[in-house]
Amino acid sequence: MKLLHKEILIAKHLQKSVFKNSAIYSITFFIGVLLLFAAFSGWDNYKSQNETSEKYQHQSREDWLKNPDKNPHRMAHYGNFAFRKSTSLSVFEFGMEPFFGNAIFLEAHKQNTANFSEAGFSNSMLRFGEISIAMILQILLPLLIFFVGFNSVAYERENGTLKILLTQGITWKQLLFGKILGITSVVMLLFVPTIMVLVLIWLTLQNFTISADETIKLLLFIVFHFIYQMFFCIISVLVSASGKTSKKALVSLIGIWLIFTIILPRTTQAIGAYLYQAPSKIQFNSDIEKDILKQGDSHNPNDVHYKAIKDSLLTVYKVDSVEKLPFNYSGFIMTEGERISSNIYNKHLEELLKIYKKQNSFSKAISFINPYIAMKNLSMGLSNTDYDSYIDFQKQAEQYRYNMAQKMNGLQIKYISNKKPGPNDKPLTIDKKHWADIEEFHYEPKGVREVLKTEIIAVISLLLWIILLFVLIKIAAKNLKAI
Image (cartoon, rainbow, N blue to C red; front, side, top):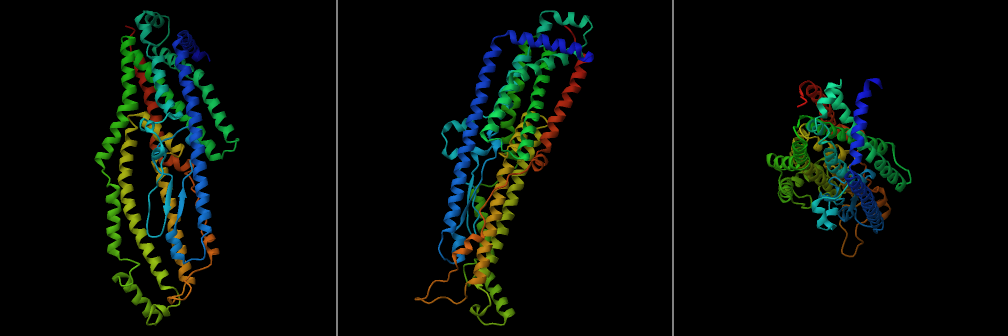
């Protein structure tokens, strides 16, 4: 403690001077109210979305099971629904969730995209973004830190006390660390209790039933946001120390805040989309349709591609008609058609995802010059509200769709006769008990290891920023002047 004695004294002095200003209490109260509002609105949104998703997921399942005896291929076209439930950490970080769909209709031969996003049912306020806990911690709190720290050193220079402090044996390094410690303590005194209350509310609303994975994600969410706040504490002191006056320091800090939180994120997104242009949804679907048509139509018995398959089957089984095959020919062809169409779709999807990956990689690279982007990406990843989580949901839904379609095709191959029924015969069907062979869809969000692996650039950039700032403190301590 002796080593930090002077730094602690400087920190306590700054802390007292900050709390002498009555405006700090008003600002703190305002941000505290916003945090509580964000917590309850986030929970309400999470609860209502999950209740809706769970309700319709079960309803879809019941409708599927209630189907009467039917041809399995008709069941494949009847289809099913996949719903994506929100994770509990989406209470803190909404991310891209309001703008992405949470339901996909699953049917044979066709891959649909997610629909029913929150934005589709919300008012125009959503266009301006929602107030979330993460937004307050990432945008508003840094601004408050700048208002607390803009005159931390510049004011000492203006009123002449800086020179006195330095002549009394206090080094620049001690002064800078003392001021940083002081601003950090102010922020912690004001907001640690609030964060604790928010976490307690979050746990209470869930009846304290959270998984180990969610617990680790929550702890990482808090720790990285603390590191992020430390960055702004250090920046405010360095700018204040290098500024001739408090006014100039404040203007510089507001400029930095605008660049980090508003200008760079918007610019980065626009540049990424310009450099790596993705096809429109219409173009994407059109290209898939063209490639599928080139491969043939599994519903057309005279199609060249599938006629070749028919001829080879007749040769292998030494029969002269498909009716004499020991399995259902139509089911076999549908299985092949599903495999071909799925491969074509997945090929086009992978190409599209490569473009989006390049766009996102550009954004992630910018996090090395903008910690806000790094923190935002990491925050969304931990709460499973990022783009990768949305794609993961689509992939899980597509795998479920493909398995469902092929299972129905397999039932057709096994149980449906090749002989077409006459006009007075009963339609070819199988027992409805087979519908239960298809399990209900359940979305599994990415675990913490996978999230950290995906967002490793964000983690590295945040840590590098802190290291860089401490290096700058060391350099500044050698070069700063009292006047």
